[in-house]
Length: 167
Image (cartoon, rainbow, N blue to C red):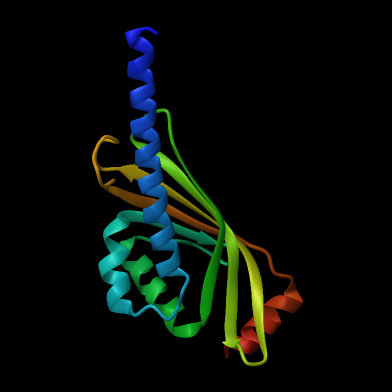
């Protein structure tokens, strides 16, 4: 075996471990964002440090933002709705530039406005685009999310039901 192969293998192992740490952090961020029983102070401590000043948030009903608007929206969401989130798949991929990457999360947002009557399962995909703030050789990845997109589908009838249940 050549020394070059050993170097590539070690580098790949380090990158895989780094990606695994990123995946754990994104899983935590997702659970905090989409479990609406989490208090605002905890969101500020554990989520906002990962949000870039120039963040753009997009979902099927809105797009735009910056860190201040993201913070307001995040807290408002937690005060208006009752959700939990079940993650089915989560994947992080670093881009070729080695400075940016993308995390995709697939799961179910469980709307529990009136959980004693019905929990509405909302299939959801979240995409986080992020910038690395340190090298992928460090123990704890440091990054900032500059784009956060939610994708989910509801029909007009389901939208009316969700709005009715939430009001």
